[in-house]
Length: 382
Image (cartoon, rainbow, N blue to C red):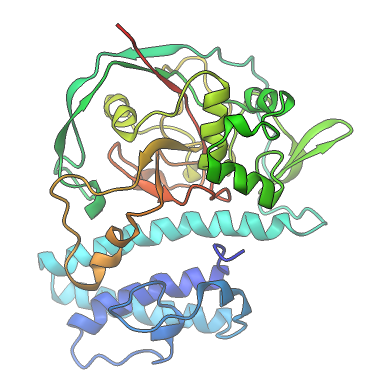
């Protein structure tokens, strides 16, 4: 799949980031580790130069993993030496901090890409064994009312943020209700059983075209067996646990389910004003579970952070007064503000320290290989 990259490419690309944006700019007598890496591991930075085609990264048998690790060691050592010599230099430290958060994004991508690759192996390989999902009684869904009004969203100046989280600004939100937890596998299975993937009336036109063209009949990694639904996980193949949040659904599937359920997806503004009042806690990659867990009955709202990225109804677009980072780093987020939708909250593959209430993830509406799920919302009338 064109979206999936080999693990060693991720390892090399995150190193390329530091070599290109830190060492090349500030290291005295800079010399590239290998000049051809400038093209080979450039993802999409047009101002830096040419890039190796993304769909062909899987053809790269060289450099070897040992060579990539040598590259990482060389660059890491040079960056640490540079940082020691320029302690307190705000510009240098800001780019290095950006690079660390960029590397956290690729830590997540490595896991999701590995899962996609392993899912195509008929031996159902296991990346990491885990205990079975805890037996629970499905946490009943309730609705959390919010009065809306003039609210403030976006980065508030505390700690790190990407440029797309800025500036903090006012927005008006009509009164709404947000579901207390994400949609579960059992609830999504009811949508399937009710002919959800056969009813064009439930789908956006582009979504229905994807259903027909790709033959979608269930979330990615689901297969129906004689004993019920099975799914591929990073712990191998297992039954679909009814109480877990449904994941690996596209925006199109999330939107169709919401319509079938008589609700809608929340806007990112609605999601953020609720999440901003909650601690950033949940099932992240730090738990080493690598799979969504059932919602805890004690938390309301539950799982706003971790477990599954939650699709919103919001197109990925700039906030009022948005400005990109200067130079080539300005390509990091801004140029993708077209034909994408915003997801919020992080997932079971996201580092916990990477997430905050204002974090805006984004993917094309057909993307399914990330740990993406949904939470319902509805408008309050009167």
